Length: 184
Image (cartoon, rainbow, N blue to C red; front, top):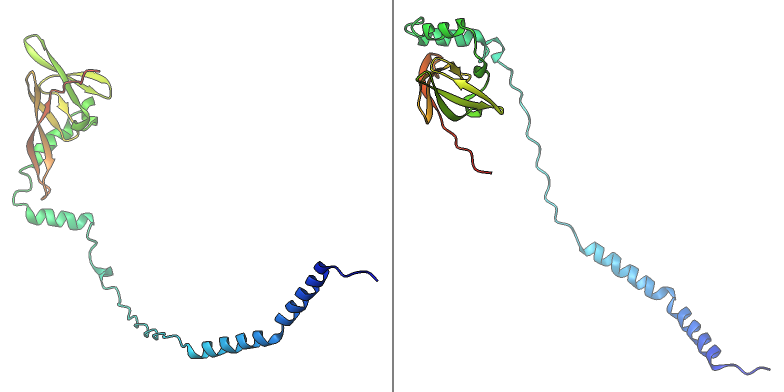
């Protein structure tokens, strides 16, 4: 017979202890405790309120005049004007003439970059889209029928024709100041 080693004996004792520890008794106690705790705990949930009922309204505006129709705008303009032909002469002359090239651009993209004298008359130099134009009094600039009235060494003075809030055409002054380029 062979002698039993102490390590083999220790392994057998450890396996026996593990089998005893895996008995069903502690597991059953744990299950009972879980069930009792579940039964004690009750969630506090507030009930969801009933949804409000939707009462649809019928659309009553389908037979009314559209707010942005041209007929409504024309009727408002007619009712507010005491002299309908008083300011139409301002714009009629502008609509009858041929447009000049600088009227295709708004004033804020133009820059007066200088002036020169030709035949004892000042001519302004205006830059638009990296092109240089000569502007004289009587020329037109901008998209609001702006006619050049006066040119000085530092600015171009012009008058524009614009519509006011009531739809009437009125003149307003405008100016294009000399722009000095920053040194590069």
